[in-house]
Length: 151
Image 1 (cartoon, helix red, strand yellow):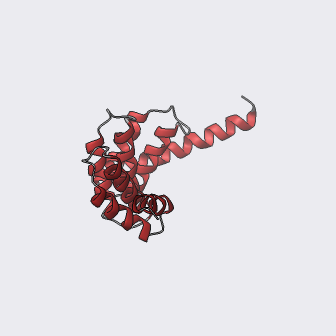
Image 2: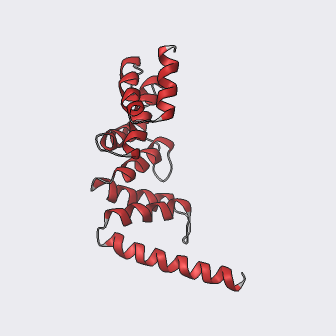
C-alpha cells in the first residue's frame, strides 16, 4: 500500500466512524448509509448481515430508501434468509411514500404480481402497480406495462 492509498483508507475509516456515531444516535439517513457501507464493504469489511440490521433501523423509522434496500435484501436473500413475502411488506411500505425509491418499489411490486413471485400471480394487480410507477416516469414499469397490455 503506497502513501496515497493509506491516506485514502484513513480518511474512509474516519468517515465510517463519524457515520457510525450518527447512526448509533438514531440519525435515520446515517443508519441507511452505514448499511450501504457494510453492504458494499466501503472502508470496512463487507458484512451484509450487519448492513440489513442498519437498513432495518432506518426503515422502521420511515426511510424510503432503507425500506427499498431492505426489501431487496429479503427478496435476494442477502444478509437475511430469503423471504419474498417480507420483501413485499417492505416494498409496500416504501411505495406508500414519495420519491424514486417509492417508485422503484411500485415497479418491483408490479413485477412480482406479474411473475407470481412472493405473491399470487395477478395481471390486475401487476397493472395497478406498474401504472403507479409508470406515472412517475419509471421506464422499466412503462416497458413492462406495454408488454402486458400488448402495445
